[in-house]
Image (cartoon, rainbow, N blue to C red; front, side, top):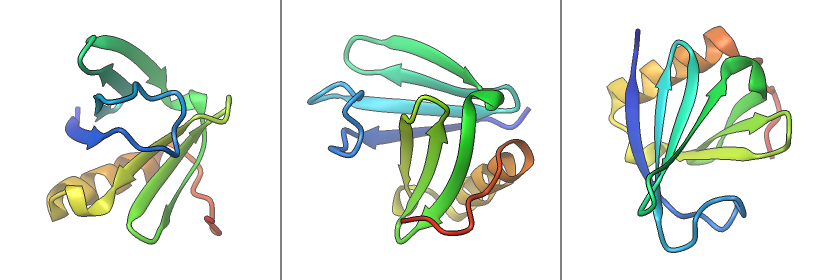
Length: 100
């Protein structure tokens, strides 16, 4: 099982994020777990809950079937984390060729 733990700041693109908090994304072979800080609310999304992913500028976008977006800033990742994440996404979710 490959696990990546990524801490991201609240981003205005995602209205479902907790304001003034952070989100931890944990990517593994089963899907994506989100942990919302400071309340520690946890959600698990299986890979089949995602429609597509793509890379645009400095972000990796991952969209659920309910149009929610997981937004990962590439510059927050080490090269190893980036490669692991791209590998997981490529294995489990359809890549969208044009992302904007």
